[in-house]
Image (cartoon, rainbow, N blue to C red):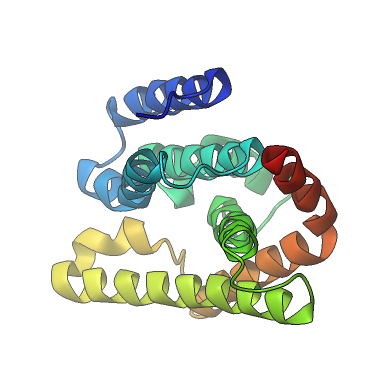
Length: 204
């Protein structure tokens, strides 16, 4: 069995510490479960595939950040995250924008996950087609998540209101997917070279 590196062990410890904090008296346990479930599934997949495919520290660090965003959102709900409530009140904004950050991350971070798998498994060479496929993957993930939100809302009714987090915006779904698109494009156009260096370092 492959030994877990010190860095990855620290990442796991941080995740479980935030997870424990998140599950203690959240605003609503049903909403907490819905919001945190992707992080739990993601961590389980990473653990079970660790021996066969180990990502770069760069990608694992980003995955940890994404998981923390989900855990914080699950604890407070995305519409009532205190720091972003303060920003809303201080700058007289129309809504709490923490969910916008979450959906930007939903495009930005999976872009590196998809990009690393495609490069290291030699499915695609670096170039325009790789960029296009990565962005398409991230946008499809975002669209799938919106469909899940819709299905849960249809199934549970008003109980899923906090999970949807529309805050009265009829275009919230479109904004969520647009921000995921912007996040994925930002990742592949601005940080590909940094990611490439991390991949090459891992190979050496």
